[in-house]
Image 1 (cartoon, rainbow, N blue to C red):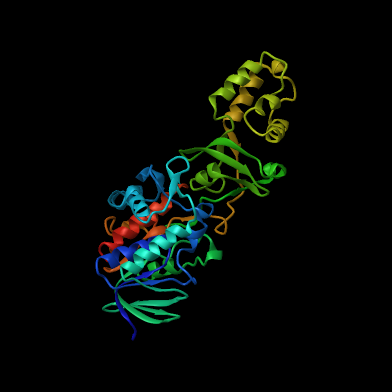
Image 2: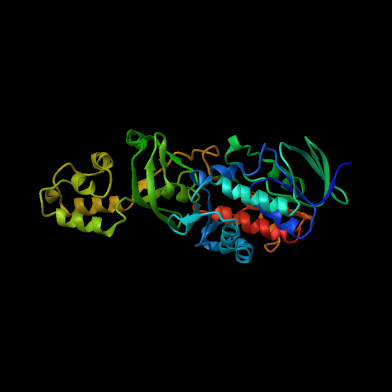
Length: 390
């Protein structure tokens, strides 16, 4: 191949790719950042409602799903949330903690993109947008054929993301390259994704737009956040979180009364003539309380509930079984669960154990974080790890 030669070529101009490129450039490496969209950072731009939940101060390995959950420990320890926050502060970007350790820009997520672009420019990174990779070969170096010509590089970093958000240009390119060089891909599925109603729960679509605090539980995981009813199913942070643990045919148990005071008010109301929906309406939207009780509770004042009826109803409120039909799929998923098998990568450098000089970082790796800045931090940490050695 004839064309410019680089020390490092990074395929994918998202969070992980930009972090890797600027880190390698700061080491004096000649770096090409290859992005098939018309600009870098498109997924960063829409994240966090346009304000970019760029990290979380509660990061720990237990917040990530993987066939080898400990794999993320090294990279996360060597480039932490506080390291990225220091970078944000150095660029004068105003930010705040929304809740649960989640860090958001006060202004726009475009400030994070501009910061990364500025760091890349200062490090001498050459960025190629509207540049589609057509094939990759390996001789004594990596040869990359693109829609903008041919490149060669000593090291190749794959940061092309997962399958979520196809409208932003997501493609299976990175997985195809991984398989080309003999890497196993763990099973892929949409994650942090809304779930759809199965037939019995379809009438709940009439409550679309209603939200209430719940605790969701599935496969040993639990999350206390808001649930949102949609026209097609359930969404909101509590559902998006638990969706990463749910599998087809499985049941999600939902505590509709996570506040202990709600139980106390129910117990007090037993001695009165009040009905169940009116008591529940103190803790959830009245329309949801009415709809839930019409399907699951005796239609009479609480004082007339037999003890077993009361106990059964309370148990159902504390562990309401929701059986989703399916997920909303990759178009609505925030991330892709699964990816390049971490057994075949170095946890310190993200380098392939099969082919020296080949690296995988970010969402394409079998590391998937919780909602709330965890996946961005994995992008920063894994990108930094590869950038330090590529």
